Image 1 (cartoon, helix red, strand yellow):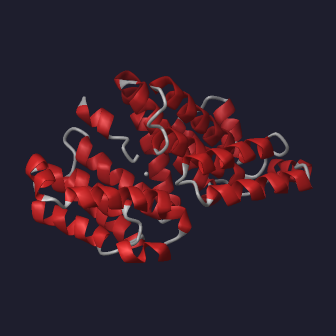
Image 2 (cartoon, rainbow, N blue to C red; image 1 turned 90 degrees about the vertical axis):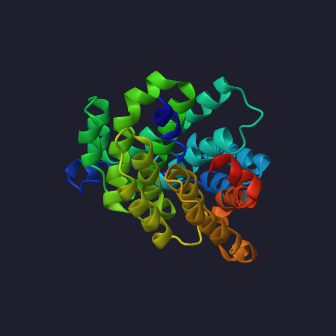
Length: 288
């Protein structure tokens, strides 16, 4: 069952018609109060690597949600705040608290997909996720990607049975993300499938390596691409030299991390911390 637990450590849209036009016409106009909350949330979100700032952003975005519910950017930010609260700032939280946070992020992901009228109709009709995902547009990718990430982590923490039941649904979402925008999440869907093909029974290390290398090609300064390549592929394939190479790639970028997008700081700091430990002989003696 190990693959089911590890699988989610990453855990990484139909054209207009008459119905869609009517919905767009009926959208409420954003108010000054809404923009005030969004501006406050975005300012705090820029420092989401700090737990208190992530919570400040989450509160502001929740307040914005009470005013207006038709902004795709709002859903993306809400999902991410809940994910970061559970996974990056969750050390002092109970299992139940983390499950609740991820479940809320998952629900906002589903609500975000409902901004697409055809997906809304399919979700409310309880169609299969294969059918729902087939209706996705490129603009649905952020909600779909983060829904998949939250869903995977939620299942992982909740337990084996839940993970086993939901693997196919999350894979479906990530497959569609890969099709529509493989660059989203700094190669997020490729990272996901890199782990996927290393962890499933009778997987494919060759496909896993292709996905990890594609993620690095898409986003060479996003350091989680290297750390997951090292953690999943290199360790399992016992390729210690490549493992060290991945760690060195991360460490070589330490002095220029300030040039990377601020949005990556929470992920890059985590990868850098791990690389400094993993490069040591003591650590490598434990895993190889």
